[in-house]
Length: 346
Ligand SMILES: [Zn+2]
Image (cartoon, rainbow, N blue to C red; front, side, top):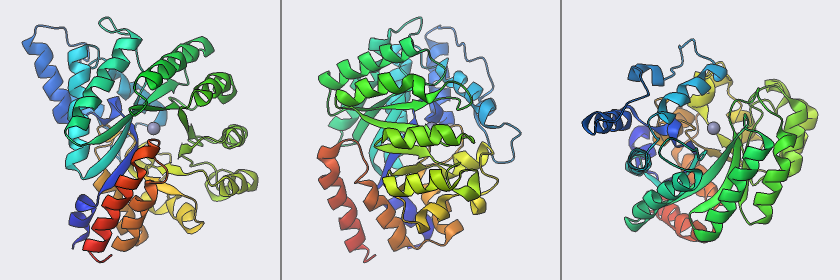
């Protein structure tokens, strides 16, 4: 099987995808069309090209956070948030994903309360599950929020985790890494963890070894990116040893890191260092809409750039089953990927 077909057909697990950053051009056009037809104001007020950040783009990581605001202006009503969630899940499914954890910061808008935002995403996921797609919701805390706002988000996360334990499975910390301090969010994250929610943290997106140490010592179930951890990539021996000994799985987002200039190119990405050191890793898209990628494309880049053969790419997907937050479906997913491996004699 050629690599492209293989990456498409391999059952894959998406564990790091921001809902608003994942909106494709067609989903955004669909929502813009809906707003126009229903006579609602379209506050996004942009050309769709402005939503995408390519490798040769002059935008850096900080600029990217402004790009997300464009999508935020579209997902402000129950209808448009439902469309965004449903269409995004369908796109991941068509790309061969058999399990998806979508993350989003529940926002109060002119049309939705925080509770309604969560309920809308959950209902959309319930419909997708009825079609057979296993999907879950990770509630995001934005680093630019106050401790009080983070507390409000976590209280909602706990409420909805209690109500829909199969769907609302985790809490994560994200947003501009140059803003806010991890320590300020520890009490809220601790509260979420005590209530049974799993935790993942965007970690090491910029050079801040003190914060990396604090985050790894917090022992989240997973971390995202992990760029500035290895001494070769702006970390030091302490951060690297801590990560290696922690065995915390790292969500790797190749295209995102290159397009935001966090990494100069695929060849100099930290993936290979992590892979060779046997750090648990899982390939993810981060923001497939903004970075114009897909999970199969991330597997393809990984296979081609680092010379990882198909049987090993399949095992990357297989191992990801151990890192998912919905523990009750690990067995089903593991069997599904093993079937694919056996069928294709990988
Ligand atoms: Zn992210």
